[in-house]
Image (cartoon, rainbow, N blue to C red):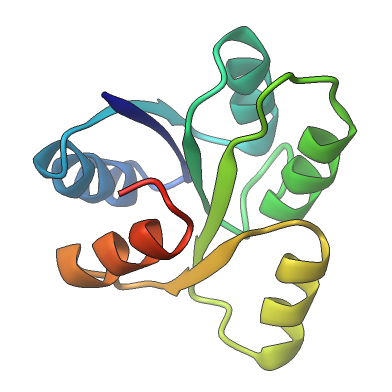
Length: 121
């Protein structure tokens, strides 16, 4: 079974994402900020991280940079999931190492297609 870490400071978004992902046969874990997510990835690396941009403690971009500096054997795919839709944000996320980008609000079809693009669905 594929695993996904949902990283978002919104409990509602985490719940919606969990519902969709479990319907796609993913095992799902959650983190409320980038620091918690980084600790979770180091403890048990997921196949994919669904990552919010704006969070307290550690932002999505800071998490992504920190993740790329770890010595993990397996690098999870990272899909940014955010309301930030400017081309500059998208380019910055991809340049920082994100594999794909999905806009909030998202639905099952959109999320599933993004997961297929990065090769985990």
